[in-house]
Amino acid sequence: MSKIYNVAILGAGNIACAMATALKGISDKACMYAVASRNIEKAEAFKNKWGFQKAYGSYEELANDENVDLIYIATPHSEHYANAKLCLNAGRNCLVEKAFCGNLKQAKEIIELASNKGLLLVEAMWTRFLPSIATAKRMISEGIIGDIHYIESDFSVPIIGVDRLSNPALAGGALLDLGVYSLTIPNMIYGTDIKTIRANAVISDTGVDATDVIFLTYKDGTMARAKCSYVDQKSNYAKIVGDKGYMTFSPVNVPDCLKIYNPEGELVLTVDTPYLVNGYEYEVLESLKMLDEGKTESESMPLSETIRLMGWMDTIRNHVGVVYPFEIKEDIAHNVEEVWGQGAAFTTEDPWDRSNTISYLEIYDTETKEREVVAEIDGVIEAPNWSHDGKFLVYNGNGYIYKFDLDTKDSTQISSGKLCKMNNDHVLKFDDSEIAVSDESDSTGKSRIHRISLIDGTTTEVTPDVPSYLHGWSSDGKTMCYCAERNGEYDVYEIDIDTKVETRLTTAPCLNDGCEYDVDDEYIYFNSVRMGLMQAFRMRKDGSKQTQLTFDKNYNTWFPHISPDKSKIVMISYYKGDLWPGDHIPNRMVDLRMMNSDGSDLQTLMTIFGGQGTINVNSWSPDSKKFAFVSYKRKI
Image (cartoon, rainbow, N blue to C red; front, side):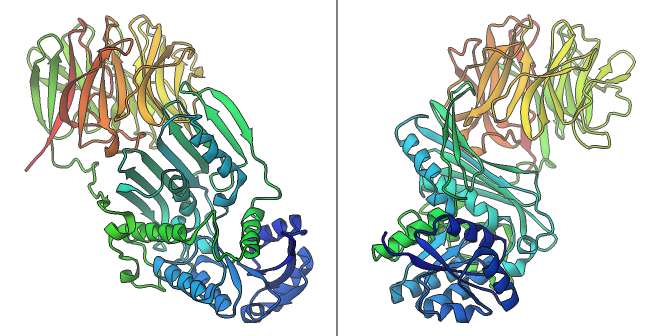
C-alpha cells in the first residue's frame, strides 16, 4: 500500500476516540484528515485533541469533501442508516460501525446503494479482522481441539444509565450493541446451517432487551449458546469445545490471547496475539487494502455476513417483542425460514410451567428390570433419597421435605423450623438422624445449606456463603460437597462441617455440579460441562485426578449417582438438541442410564417424561439393587 489515504470520522463520541487512537498508530497508511460533529465546537476540540487536519460542524460538509477517501461512521445504531446514505450519495466510501443498521430492511437498502455507486462499504465488526481470530480459526482447522461440537459466547457487562443502550429511539438494547459479537463467534466457526433457535430476553422498563440468551442448534448436531446483557455481572468470553479439548478467549469482541485446555480442564497452551494499537486499526487497514485493490467490500467481513447477522437479530427481536420507534413491526417480522435457512424454527415451550403436573414416585429394580410406582401425587415432588436403613424415602415438594414410609406408603412432612423454601438438593446423614438441605428462604433468596434433625426438627446452618447447592455428605459425617457460585464461577466445593472451612475442588472454567461421595469417601463423582456437553467425571476427595467417565456426543449427562457397593452409576441424560449443556430443566423426555463405576457397559434403562427433579440426588437402596426416581405427567 503506497498511498496514504485520507480517513475521516463522522461523530465525535467515545468510539470515535478509540478509532482516533488506532489511526495515530497507523499514520504511515492513514492520514487523520477530518472529523465531523453536529456541533462545531465539539468537532474542533476533537480535532485539536487527536491531531486531525479539519473539523466540520455538520455531517453534510464532511460528506461533500472530495478529499476524503474513507469515512468511519461512529454514531449510534439508529443513525447509521441515514449517515451512511448521506455519505454514499455524496460518493464517499464508508466503514460503518456495528451494528450496521437498525434492521435488515435498512441494511439491504444501504448495501444496494453502495453497489449501484461502485463504492466500498464495510461493517466495522472489528472482531472479524483481528489476528487472534485468524489464529484461532487456523488452529481449529488444524485439529488442535478435535471436531468442534459446542460454542459458548457471552458478552455481558453492567453499564446501567447509558442512553444509547436503554433508549429504543437509539436502537438500544443488548442485542445490537453486545449480542452482535456473541452471535459473530458461532457464525465464524460454524457457518449458517441452523436447525432450531431458542431465544429469550429480559425486557427493560424502556422496552428494549436488557438480556438475551440465544441457543442455536445446527443441522449436523453441533450447538452454540450466545448471551448478552447490559445489566448482568461482567462476563466476556468465548469457549469453543472439541472432542480433544477446548479453546477460550476473552474479551469476546477483541481477544489478544488464546488458551487451549485438555479434557481434564488443564491449561496446556497459551498463544498471545497482541494488537498493533488497540484492535480498531485492522478494520481500517483492510478497508484501505480493498481501496488499493479496487474492491467494494471486505474479505474478512463480506456484506453477505452483514445481511445475515442483521437478519438474525431482526428475527430474534421479532420473537422477543422488541420494536424500535423508527420501524413498524412488519419491518422485522421476516419469515423465519428465509432468514435462518430451510427447516429452522423457534421453540416457544416454557418448560418451567409445572402448575398442571402429576408426579409419580417410582422404584427401579436393576436385577428384574421392573418399575414400581409407589405413590402418585397431584403436584410436583422431586429428588428422592433412600434411607440407609432401607425403610423410607425422602423427597421435596412445595418448599418442604417429606418422609415416605415404604411399608405404609404414607407421607409426612418433616419439621424444618423457619426453612420453607427447600429445593431438590438434600442428603441424609449416614445414620439417618439428620437431613442436610439447600434452602432459599433467608433474606438473600439464594440457596444456603442447613442441617435438620429428624428427631426434633432443629436446624443448623452449614454454609455461610451463598449460593450453595448441596449434593453429598461424607460417610464419616464430617464434610459435605456441593456446587457453589463464587466470583462468577460455579465449582465443586467441600466444607468441614465443624470449622466451616470451604475448599474449592474444581477450577475448570465452566459449570461443575452434581457432586457426591462414594461410600468410602475415596472419590467424588460429579458432572462438568468443560468438554462442551455435560459429562460425568470423578476425582479424588482432595480434587486431584479429575477423570472423565462419559464421552457422549449426543447427550448431556447429569448427576452420576454411585451405588453403595461402588459397582454402578445411574444418571439422567438429556438429548443434546433439547437444551444448552448447562441446563437441567423439567418437562423433557430424558433417559435414565446406568453404567459400571469405571464408565464401561453404558446402557439406557428407560426414557421418561422428567428432567429437573427426577433424580437430582443419590437415591440408591442400601443393597445397591434398586434406585428411586420421579417421573411426571401433565394433566389433560
